[in-house]
Image 1 (cartoon, rainbow, N blue to C red):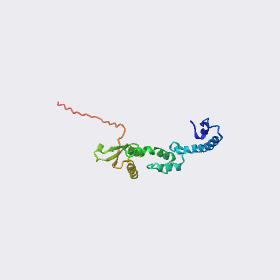
Image 2: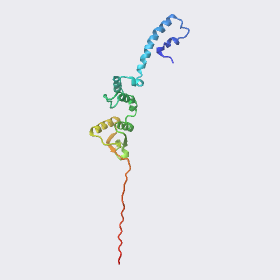
Image 3: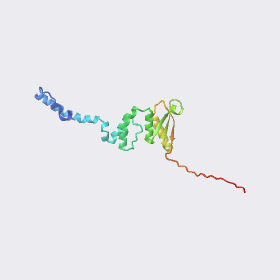
Image 4: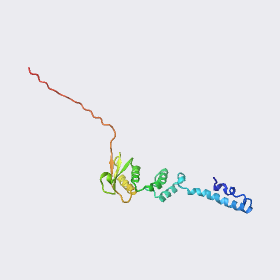
Length: 186
């Protein structure tokens, strides 16, 4: 494959005009500029080079891609990951899967229960965290804010519930005692 920076224009000149001095001078002048354009063209590809970009540019990309819940104080690898996934997340934003993903970022597992699953009103839903302990009030407020940003506009969050099913075996032991009285008459 011919690269712009490799003087490709001189190699692809037809033999009928390659001997002309004026054409050679034009090609020489254009080749230098094409090499510069070839180097600058790599800068257009942003996402494939995301691991090489400095933090300032990653912050600007987060603003440009509308990354939800972007934390400026987070580590650079976390920021890069959020920017990389931003376009894909916007494709399914407003679906139950998006709400589950937002909740699963803070808790281990979450599931969305639609209104028909629990007998609620149409366009309502609940989020149930499975195998989680109940967090403090500030975490719950942030979770409601995150769910509201990921859900579609017409749906309403009825509440966050926590479902805990302990794992393990319960052993029960007991003793049976039988007592009989026998009377003898003499």
